[in-house]
Image 1: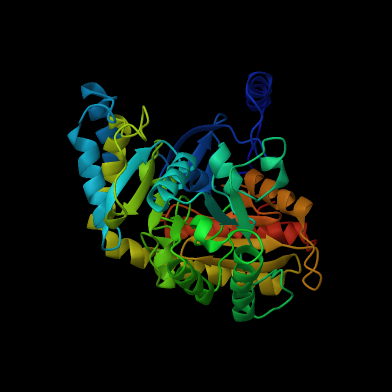
Image 2 (image 1 turned 60 degrees about the horizontal axis):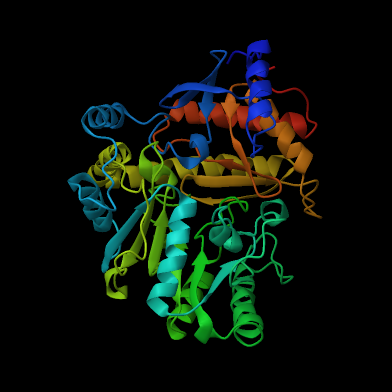
Length: 446
């Protein structure tokens, strides 16, 4: 693949951005997005990149969606974009909600549409308090649920996300079991799971907030921004039991892990557990902003006027989302098979990298939600933060875009539909970058 060239054109755009935009979370490498199709993204210079980011897990079925999604958007834009869906009625959002409910576990039947994952989680906080008449919410350390005040109260990935924005409303955090870095000093995944449940019972229910006061437990089935942490199956099942026994709702944040990314429509399915409320966003909008909060029908409804939003159910967005969802419904088994196959291929390569390079400390994931964690050395597990940035930059200049997560993790989340040849090429670029940063010579693409 041709070496990427960056000129003054790109740097001028970045300079203009920094002059007028609030600072967010820009990556260290200078990628200025221009266009995309399928497995590839193109920058303002015309450089071509294999996409291992799905643009933050948005383009599950190819960069910029497929032709059917784009045509559905164009057609709807010419007809009506905004229908004030929370004040007036419209058929398309209802059809989408009906289709979405069909993909959920039995007993789900109420949907609220919003604009993002953050909003979906804010909605879930309100619904949890409404349905239980309790005030407190429990989340987990290292979690990411969004950046508005309620969702940010649950978020605890990095101090920079919370610093100067508090106080936060009625939230308590428990320890999420990380088998690679268990905070309870054990290398055994099952022991780590047991210790996490014991922490909730002893340090929260008995010393902080009574279980009688907790409305809901929010959890990511796979922690996303926190580093793609996969908890032990036993932990999730024990957590479900703990919530049920204490009259607490379990909320599954599927914003990044849902919509077939792990090979199932909901990542929670891998644990044999059903939540009471699910939140979804990112890929569900087919490339446009959409959040959804889906609850068990038995929980009830919202009183008129108690909850609404201006743009939820926007018709142009729903046209994209419904077209995408119909594709998933029609091809679900094929998608599951593809994710399973590609996921095995990715994990096999990552395991080989782990065996070959001292800098690769851990590899993990489910389906095509995968990651590798970089460390200074395998024995001490000190996060290799600068090395992670060097690997990502090396990938960029050799035609691969990927994103960080956690302190020193790289997430590998290409479009689910990525071609086998491009998947291999991307993994080769990634390994070459790791090899070079690990100090084992120049990469093959130099």
